[in-house]
Length: 81
Image 1: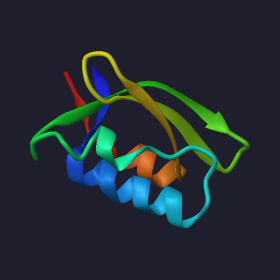
Image 2: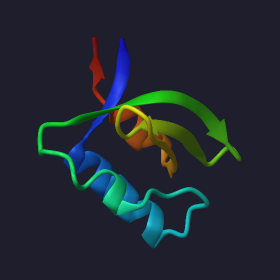
Image 3: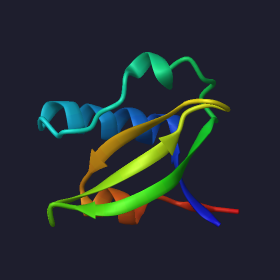
Image 4: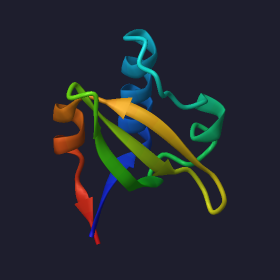
């Protein structure tokens, strides 16, 4: 089982990360090209600087990216099998 972003959740989280000047954000072109019901699995997660989670998200078969998100956002991500 793994936590996943929906396309819309990833877009919102990335916008927050950009707006709040977090260290890691994603390029929108790397995930916005996918269809709406695409799920983006979190393949690695760690607490970063005691203020946020740094997560690695699988964007397609060969590409992943890093994004820093609040703990609440990470905790709210649904788990898929």
